[in-house]
Amino acid sequence: AQSVAQPEDQVNVAEGNPLTVKCTYSVSGNPYLFWYVQYPNRGLQFLLKYITGDNLVKGSYGFEAEFNKSQTSFHLKKPSALVSDSALYFCAVRDFKAAGNKLTFGGGTRVLVKP
Amino acid sequence: NAGVTQTPKFQVLKTGQSMTLQCAQDMNHEYMSWYRQDPGMGLRLIHYSVGAGITDQGEVPNGYNVSRSTTEDFPLRLLSAAPSQTSVYFCASSYVPQETQYFGPGTRLLVL
Image 1 (cartoon, rainbow over the protein chains, first blue to last red):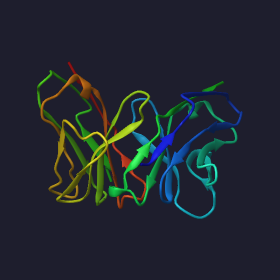
Image 2 (tube, chains in turn cyan, purple):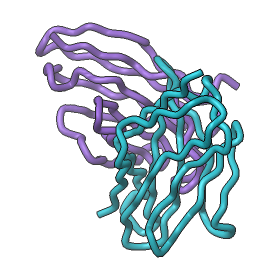
Image 3 (cartoon, each protein chain N blue to C red):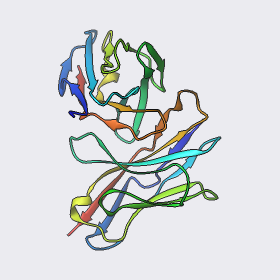
Image 4 (cartoon, each protein chain N blue to C red):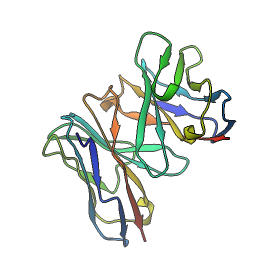
């Protein structure tokens, strides 16, 4: 079975400092990895994805993520956080070999960027 | 394009009542799915569909039914609401399962 772990419930960072949101995954086949962001009372918005190719993936709003196969991780990063980055972030994995190609989400990490 | 739309935005039910959560997309996506979001548990897949006339169960299907008579619509039915179904429900769609899913704004459901 596929699974995703986001070990931190909340990450606090000062504006202008680097932001990292951690994600590790477990799949039996090749992973498709995604990051989504959710602002209050809104649906999920796509940030970036890894399917294949370069391990460093660049996405929306200055975010990037690094796929590390040996550590089964896909951490989300931003070099300089903004107050407007405060939101709930979800990592998700899809095992292409799994029946129905289901997308499994982590529990979410709340990011709070302080001015 | 309106993208993925969901109605209603908020609903209060009494235990035992039934209702249908509506979801529609205008992007001609084949793959549609329903998730529920509960604090600390992320999003869990309820049911999904890979095309009109084809549906399958996700991780937490009990108490919910779906149908897919058209490409555009994917309603979720609660046959007999229970307090455990209090949650926020999201519908999502994509061209194919491995591609990016686009989410609707959600329906907040409270079952008393």
